[in-house]
Length: 422
Image 1 (cartoon, rainbow, N blue to C red):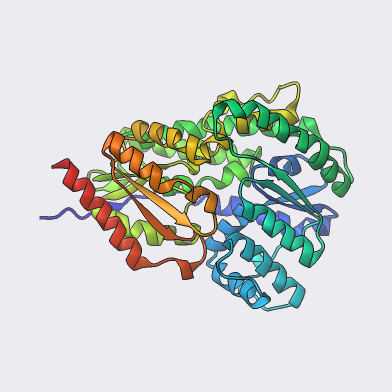
Image 2: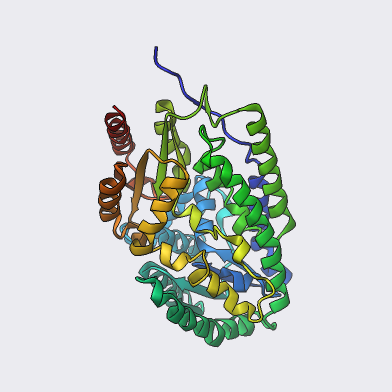
């Protein structure tokens, strides 16, 4: 008799009010006389710390729109406005939203309409980021600041690149933020954010330990939903409170031996590479769980500062400290995001989380993540015997997501795992 697997999700309902509060405050910012910055990449922290400025993390808006089931409507507006479907869906989403405002087009859920920005900040990891900043500047006249964030090919390159990025931030970004906001950049506020955020991330890491257990007590998707407090509520009390509650839930599950998958835990522990499919989290999971498969870890969710204890809120140069975290600290986001450091990082995750198979998500929207995927699969399979497949799709654009493809490739991966277990 076959086992009937069912998901036992954590209670992550606390994320909803927190996320709604963030976007509501952003929508109301200009009514309160504040300036608004839109930021792509990890440099949003500088606008977060600035008095008289509300900040919007552009990838976060995509996840919010996708979660509200509004992405397709806004993307259709972008296409109507002249955007090509094959370009970055995050780019098209913002263009579509601004086109709705400029042309007074109707929208089903007005909560996805944000105030037009006074400043665009691009921390450019991929080419698309500068493209959509340039496009918004050209079409809507919004000032854009582009900061290059080179991904390192070798670890010895990291110190040199770190200095280059720090100089850009100090000489270009901070003056632009001060000029736009009309207020002096507040280093003490940045330190406060780092202190509170560091404590939250340390608790978050304690939650990660429960993913290492066999059977796992929660899933990568549960954590994906829980990323929001790390960004939206960065340095705010509600972020800390959310993760304290999450940890308590996991400790209770551990005490009562309650797994993430009923009846007795997962059959397949999967690694997920690439962005999470924000608008289709349920769709993807429903194709895995009936087989007893769940995603356990992934390079993208683990890029968010896996070594928070290394963050120093009391650093002499607090502006540089954030760049150090990206480059030469153990976190090394700008190394692990590339295919060279990525393989090294993935190998570590495979071992720590006892992974059986790998799913690599190839997206037209984030081409940087696609670099080297097939090579990484090939090298890891040869070295560890862990099979992997590539799934093609998008995080928010339903026209690029094929359920038949997902089902076929997931089932093929599980068959490969079974064959190697015999």
